Each structure stands twice: as structure tokens, then as C-alpha cells.
Image (cartoon, rainbow, N blue to C red):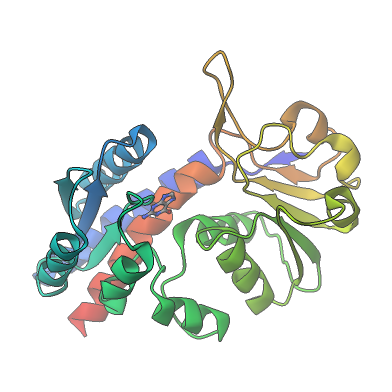
Amino acid sequence: MTILDGKKLSDKIKTQIKHETQLLKQQGITPGLAVILVGEDEASKVYVGMKEKACQASGIYSKVYKFPQTISQDELLNTINQINNDDTIDGLLVQLPLPPHINTTEILQAIDPSKDVDGFHPYNVGRLVAGLDSFAPCTPLGVMELFKEYGIDVKGQDACVVGASNIVGKPMQALLLNEFATVDICHIYTKNLAEHTKRADIVIVGVGKINLITADMVKDGAIVVDIGINKTKDGKLVGDVDFKNVSKKASFITPVPGGVGPMTIAMLLKNTIKAAKLHLK
Ligand code: GUN
């Protein structure tokens, strides 16, 4: 069994990005990322802090726009417009979730697709599904990068994605299909989850449920990727996979923490550099 070490790979990518940032700076360009954070969601604050820190460490200029929970739709749209027109900013992301009175779809659609480093704008979603060059969401992109690093070719493999969110499951399905995997996507209404996961060469799960995937649900030699982040009662960070037992059957497996999590941030930096190069043209 081999651990898919996201921490190690993300450090390697961050070093490459630091180098690329230096090269861009020599051409008079400083890549810039704007992050919009609304409200007091603790997890969102932690994620935004991590994104800011990663930018600083790699020489990317970052600016966080913090707003109270009570911000109106129009105020938020005006801010996005202003950032869309700001030449010092190449990438813009709105940290989700937004408060219930905000229309998230409208907010995401207001982002300039050429600055959409999260890949959530329908323009980029459409291009991803069509197999065209696009900004792809950072978490599934990080999974594909891990596969590449460890020499895992998904072509012709049976993949089972558990969780069908717009942020993880659906773009994961598109990225795998674009590389010619046969993809099965499961969700809350799937009748018999184990029936699907047991068949798969690759199981990718991002649901947010501790021990959702147990050893009896995966075949021998399966590649298992855990995108879940959960806190146990004693405050320990765990994924959706029963790591202790599933790792005995898997050929490759991601740990939590230290698997997909750090890769998400690394891919955000990579997408920001991609946006900066796009704007350079
Ligand atoms: N909330 C949970 N995951 C993400 C993400 O990847 N991007 C943004 N913007 N918000 C999130």
C-alpha cells in the first residue's frame, strides 16, 4: 500500500510556483488573488487564512475582502464588479457557503470567467465538461495531480465518485471522464452504495460522514481517495474513509489530514498563476 502524500506533493508544487512567480515578477507582473469572505463561519475563516498564507509564501499578492453576515446582494455584486476591473488582481474567489439571503448562483456568475480560479462560473463548468481548457475546481484538480505524480493512469479504469456536489463530485466526474475513466457517481439517493464502490478500481469520496467507506465496501487493490473533512468528538480531524481498515486492502490511499487538503491550496495557487499568464497575453 502506498500513501498518496498530498503534503509532500503540495510542497513541491509550491516551490515550483514560487519560481514561476519570480519569473513573472521579472516581466513586471505580480500575480494577485482576491478572496471574498462573508460572515463568521469558522471553517471558512480557517480556509481563507490558509489561502492567504500560501499566497504570501509563494510571492502572490493577496487581498481579503471581509464582510459582515448582513451584507446585501447588491453590495457583494458591486465588490465583485470592482475586483473584475482591478488590474492588480488575476484571480477572484468567493468563499462558500454564503448566508442564506444571498443568491450564490448570481454571485458566482458575476465573477469574470478569466479570474474564476475556483472554476465555479458556469462558463468554466461548461468548458470543463466539453473537455476544453478551463479553470477547474481546485479540490478535484488536486486529486488528478496526485494521480499524475504517483503514475496512476485513470484511462479505462472504473472510478466511483461518492458525493455529487458542484465543488467536488461533479467536476471530479468531468476530469476523470476527460481522461477516459468510466465514472459512476453516487449521492444521497443512491440505493446501494456498497454495490457501486465494491466494483470500482478507484473510489473517491467527499461527503462529510465519518467511516462512510468501510473495508468491506472496497475491492482488494483499490485506489482510495478521501476528500472528507470531519472532526471527531475529541477534536481529531478524520475523513470519510475508515483509514485503519481500508488501507489494509487499498493499493494507494490518501490520508486525512495530509492528503487532498493541501493539494486544494496548491491548485488554487496554480490556477492563480494560470490566470496571471492569461492576463499577460
Ligand atoms: N467552500 C468549501 N470549499 C470551497 C472551495 O473550494 N472554494 C470556495 N470558494 N469555497 C469553498
